[in-house]
Length: 237
Image (cartoon, rainbow, N blue to C red; front, top):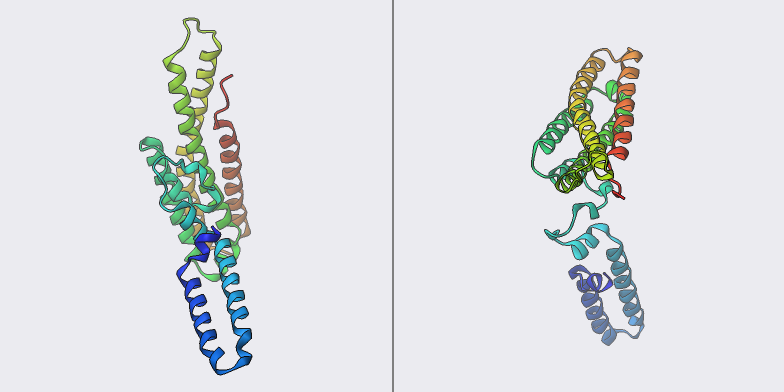
């Protein structure tokens, strides 16, 4: 990273210009000795800042993500829920999540496009919506991992219905069904939230409407968080 920062074009330009000015001024005045250490100090500072720049770090270390690199390796806090949704396998789950996120964007846009009074009333709603969108993708991601484990278990089940492997298979199928139901319900609930935002914008003086919206968002986040923990596959044992 330090090597890449040292070779960054803007940093090299500073170094070359500074050294050039030093050589030029050295012939004109003996007091120009301070220019070289100042240039070197500036260059070192720029190199240090570049090495700590997260965008520059991703450009140097990450570059274009290799097709063999799992998207899970990238922190979910640094990536939008929409982009993470595109990492899901193509299929019905991804389609439902993308549809739900489309509604989520409309709800956020409805809040951000409302008048100042409504935006002030719904100040806490947008972070809750972002959290719900992230958790929805977490649930979908866990659902797809659970489905993959279930497919592996179904390939090699023992003849007895009471085997541990078959018990694990039933458990994963229950988790998958719960995730499917919650993903569908989330899309419907986001539609209701959009309608609530519109009603609040019309009647922003009614505190009960705002409390109802926040309670719905808190309930949605709580369910998605709990399901996200449940759906994450554990070792079969």
